[in-house]
Length: 404
Image (tube, rainbow, N blue to C red; front, side):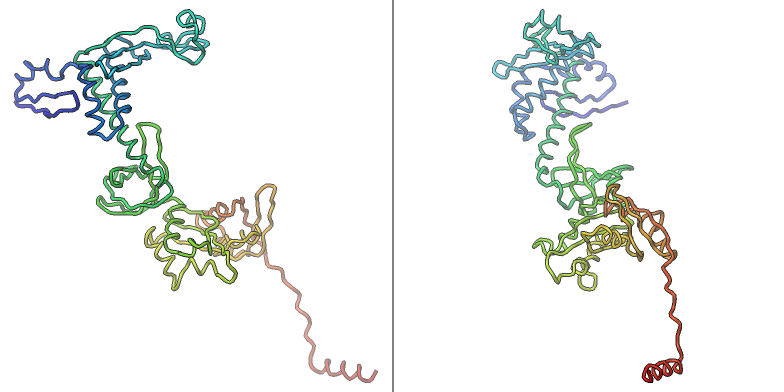
């Protein structure tokens, strides 16, 4: 039976290609060449050029790999190991350090202040004390494998960090990307050299993302937690809708109209509060556009199933809340500014409209205005009709007044 492994060169690590079971047994000692420190030193500049990374970054990665390899061969898992690589003479020094603490919980990597001062009089809490140092020239196969894994992983992370740094100034903007891969909880989108992720919470429910499809996405953030930096993208964000309207409504650029607030449940409904800085300019009509062209263009991007309510913004809280309850007709609004709470009174036939399906309308109105809203049904005030007089009574009254 024949087995194959990839024959490729990775930095200073060479994987050999075998053809038969016998070859694997005879040559298994040569699967990974010993890790040579001098070779690593010579490779720093080459790796930096190939990966388009600063030499300092590559040097730091290799030092982390040397520390991990030494710990694998000579230390314990909990030890803190630091490595220093001298690129001038191709030597490396490994230091085993401990953190200075008040109370030792792990003897492998912690030391109390009193003992630390015996080793280094300048030691202080929170600092590190060097316990031992070792000159390193080479490692065996197992440690070399560990170093290789560390280097490849750290270089990938460093490359990703450099690429994502180009997007730092693009956070808060919309770009066009290509769907690369669709996973159960995330969609991976290619943006030139970088690949961003769109989590399920940032997607539009019910929207289809086909591989190879070009879509607009909002660059929300760059997360640097977990397994390296990640570019977070969104189509379900409120700011995505704001940016789309900004493209369709040129008056926003001049400051004639503006969006004061947005509340959105992606794929279902969006409420937009708009205002005008110029007298005589209708903000709602400006955003809707002639024959609804502007709002329709936005809906074409986010999906026809998502409805958009555009309402006029008012400084008066009661008026703003009444507008936000659209399409329900509001009788009156009572506002409690101290508790940021308001009671909205509607007629009985408007109560279900005010609340909306599963509470959606009142929920979005609450987020739009910033007030907790209570909906109460109230019968409209009835006025007593005045009794009607017949024409004879009216004429007699006039005659009597004249006679007097």
